[in-house]
Each structure stands twice: as C-alpha cells, then as structure tokens.
Image 1 (cartoon, protein in one colour):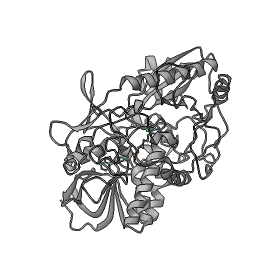
Image 2 (cartoon, helix red, strand yellow):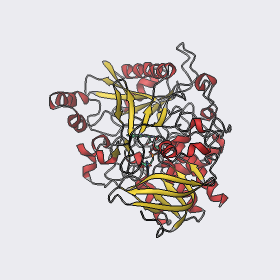
Image 3 (spheres, helix red, strand yellow):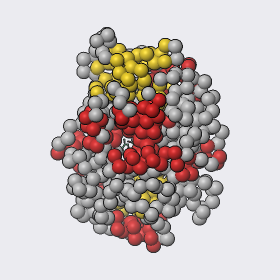
Image 4 (cartoon, protein in one colour):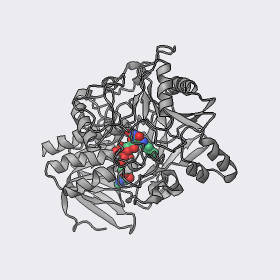
Length: 511
Ligand SMILES: Cc1cc2nc3c(=O)[nH]c(=O)nc-3n(C[C@H](O)[C@H](O)[C@H](O)COP(=O)(O)OP(=O)(O)OC[C@H]3O[C@@H](n4cnc5c(N)ncnc54)[C@H](O)[C@@H]3O)c2cc1C
C-alpha cells in the first residue's frame, strides 16, 4: 500500500459524473487543489461508438457488476452500474430539464409518511440551473412548456428543426388540445449529424455535450488532477473528519491512501451509499436510518406506436418533443394523483442494436419492423419508500475490498398508477398520429437512480444538511443524485448538476 508519497489535496472528489464535475468546478474556482478519483476508464471516440459494440449495454467494460445484486422474483441477480470518465453522461440522451417550482414542495399524497422534504427552493437553485445550461450549451425554447419554471436567462442555444416523425407527433398533440414543446437538449446542433445513436451510445463526433466532451477537459485545464481507473474502497474517519481516502488501481491492483482536507462523494445514487455503509460512516450520522434508503428511479416505460409506413426514412435524430399537460395530474382521469410526470419522444433503437441483441431469427424481422415504429417515454415520478434501497450483503469483499451490496426496489401502487395514467395519454398521441397499435416496454434499469442519502432540515430524517454536508462529519459532502428527497417528474441530470455547483461553491466559499 502506498500513501506517504501522495501529495495532500485541498479536496478529493469521488466520481466524475454530474455531481462530481460540477462540485469540482466550484472548488477549483475557489483556488483549491482538487483530485478526482474515477472508477471507470476513458471512452475513446471513433466511428466504432456508433457500431453495435458502441451501445453501453453491449460494452461490459463500461459497466461493473461484481458488487451489486438486485433482488428479483427469482432471487438475487447481478446489477450493472455504468462506470467511465464522465459517468453515464457519455451514454445519456441529453434531455436537460429543470425541475418545476412545485417539485421542491411535493404534496403529501406523493411523499406519504416518508419525511421527504426539500430544504432548498427552486429560486435558490435557479442561478445554478442557468450556469449549468451555459456550461452544457443547452438548446431549448422558452415560453412554450406549460409548466415552465421561472428562468433568469434565455437558453444558450436554439433547438434543431423538427425531424423524422416529430412534426407528426406535434400535430397529433395539438389536435388533442395539448401543448407540445421542445425538450431542452445537451446537443450541439452545429456539430450534430442528426443520427439516431444518441441515447445509450457515446457520440463519435462529440456533438453530445456530455461531461467528458464539455467539462472535464476544462476542469483539467484549470488544474484539476483526474485519475481514472481508481476504485475508492473506503473513507477513513477520525474525530468526526475524513482523514484518508483509500483507492485501488483497477489495472495494477495497487492500493493507495490519499489525504485531503475535504471529500466530496459523488459516486452515484447506488455507489455512494455503498461506500458510506462500507466505511461505516452512517454510525456518525443522526439520520443513520436513511443512509441507503428511499431509492427512487422513476417509474418509466417506453411506448412504441406501429405505423403503416416507415416513420423516420432519413434516419434523423428526433428526441425533440415533450408534453407536460399532465405533469401536475390529469383532470380527465379519476385517481386524485396531484403529480404524474413527463411524456417525451424516444427514438426507436437503431436496427444494428436490435440485430446485435436478439437471436438472428427474431432480430432480423424485428429490425425491419422497427422502421415503422416511433415512441414516447413516460417518466412518472415515484414515491420515496423506506423499503427501497442499498444495503450491505453477506459474503466476502470484492478484489477492491468493497463488501457486496444489495439493491431492493419495489414500485408502489401509486408509482404504477402514475405511469399508467401517462401511458394512456401517450397512447392517445401515438394513435392520433396514425399508429395502428402500440406496444409498451417497462424500463427496469436504475438509470434515473436518486434519493439514497437525502438532504433535509430534520437531522433524524435526512443524512445531509441543506448544504449537502454529511451530518456528523464536518468535511464530507455528497453531491450526486443521492441527495434528492424526491425524484421530480423529469430526467434528473440538470438538477443534480445545478445542486452540485451550488454545493461546490458553498464549500469553496467556506474555504
Ligand atoms: C442510457 C442513459 C440515458 C440517460 N438519459 C438521460 C437524459 O436524457 N437526461 C437526464 O437528465 N438523465 C439521463 N440519464 C440519467 C443520468 O445520466 C444520471 O441521472 C446522472 O448521470 C447521474 O449523475 P450522478 O452525478 O448522480 O452520478 P453518475 O453520473 O452515475 O456518476 C457517478 C460516477 O462515480 C463513479 N464511481 C462509482 N463508484 C466509484 C468508486 N467506488 N470509486 C470511484 N468512482 C466511482 C462512476 O463510475 C461514475 O462515473 C441517462 C442515463 C442512462 C444510463
């Protein structure tokens, strides 16, 4: 084990995703020396990114699953977590929504007795949303989204023209009396070649404004040291402070002990509680019982309409339109749910991916039928439920010294009802656009995982204070999706990023 030769840093950031990068920016701006430790490696960019092997589901080296097990009906099964420089932003769809003002004061009907409460308001986060939109060069259109929150600055870029099936979806929505609007996207229209390999693929021409494209080179230019391929396995606490950060080099197996004055934990909503529990830090926290609990992931489903003719003959990118007419419930339906969520366009997977994933006998015809599909994704806000979360499992530690972790998650009846309500409306839109029938695919991944180390005012019901400092440990903060008390009804990355920038600046100002 090495250690003494390592310099001491002002701050160590664990994880290079949204939570890590945006917090790091605040620290570096304050003049701090920052080391970022990232478990994954760099994702190279070449035409291969768009090939069959480019999809993150087919590239096991961007996923580690040794430590995680998910409870299913048939027992425990391995659960992959994306690990690479920039985190899943490399493979994300780029949809960059702000939460609505009312997302920060969720109704009782949604939170139940979970004790979830946001200790910050939309207006406190608004300046950071604006800055992150600038940094990621978000293209959007203000003034159309019927639930749009206040914004102090215009979108930095204009969206690309509607393409493929989008005009047809827009027309159908309007015919139903709805108000379709443009999804704010982290895609640079000047570079984008409008292909359909966006969601789930790395962009070969760096048109997607992921973190490795847009922010990490700038952070390194400002002096940050990034060490990819380093798995943090333990945070060592002494006297109410983190004194050491232990990490293992994935290539050599060498253990290193790093030292710093501050630690920002941003390993994602599954790995962050895992690391806290593995380091037994919850014992310091008056809110110990929430560490690892209240895991949310949205109750998502993709609905595809089958059309008589190919929907996107020129193979153009078309994750472009969203509907928020039912974000705050659907008056036309009984049920009394005050919040539902978002409906947004989703592209049919590229035919190459379907051929690669399915046996040839099914894959070939499926790939042909795919041309006649276009889809909508329902993103339903889910409830914070104590029984959902990450705990340490039995068994021996893995080769990095991390104990096994187990994930348990069950949707509530309300979660499923919210998703059903959104899917009913999605079906109406697709049918009005001319779909002969629809098929639904329930999303089972943890791609929108949040909530496992939530912030709050009440020290017994939240593990982080309103500044996202881990209670009981004065120099430890959490800045990834773990911090969310509730999941909101839109994709989470922009809110994770805005909050991480807020916290990074707070830490920087404290000095
Ligand atoms: C295919 C896909 C599409 C998506 N599309 C969208 C979208 O369109 N819009 C949107 O808003 N969101 C989208 N998301 C979700 C979004 O990517 C996540 O919400 C977001 O990246 C989470 O950010 P985070 O900071 O919480 O953690 P992450 O971004 O997950 O970052 C955590 C980082 O920590 C690293 N790490 C983990 N453990 C360790 C350890 N022990 N030591 C060192 N490093 C460690 C990981 O490798 C990772 O890089 C998508 C996700 C996926 C997978």
